[in-house]
Image (cartoon, rainbow, N blue to C red; front, top):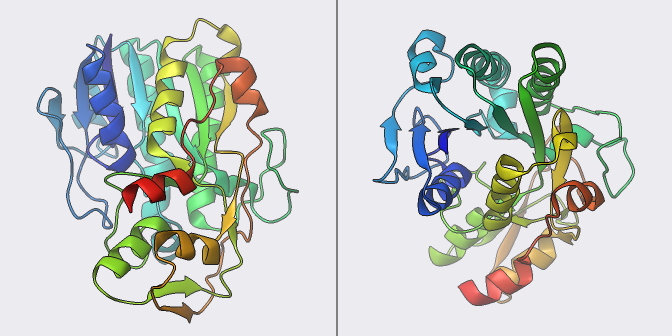
Length: 300
């Protein structure tokens, strides 16, 4: 296939690009290198490199021509930066997603696979979270990502552009961002331990998270792109491990003996995340392969 990956030089996107290239696909990688928590960007030398923002419709449009599938990962992808700058989050996550969908529609792309977030479930929904629960968006990040979901559903239902929505739960793994205080927590802990610094525990550290390895996220995306099941289109699927641990447990897994300090709780974040993954198992036959406990043992 000829495919386009937005955000393809970032953490998740670069792993997806590598896998698509290794499977013999012709890959266009589009990324504006704006992610502040990335220390570096990963451009696969075998893909076509396009440094451009999804907010620039006329600039990105030509790259969608003759493309079979689009994997849309480009986003303002951190909660706290989105709280600090809601306007940018709306521009990138809502308007940028509309640009990707419209360019796909105009150029005859068959499928768009959209990377969304488990933060859509918020605080009001019981655990584990399932896709039929109402949205409870607590911050500009989740609001704007859910806006992107609604656009995907509309383009599927109104315009016939086949879309699949994935809600990711706390993705970790090789190349994960480690820069700054808002990088994913696994990367922050590993960076702090490597530098001989205490691990910073937000609040009491009892928040529980469902951690999902990046390779499992990649396999979900590729499964959707090659699926012959028409029932997946216009649908939302959780991509998680189906297990969760708290931050104190995570700190022990990273380094049991390393010092740690507690910092102030953050607004707009859930206390517990846990994915019900029955739907993705049923529709795509997808099952997570990596547990964070095993990965951290291997890493260590």
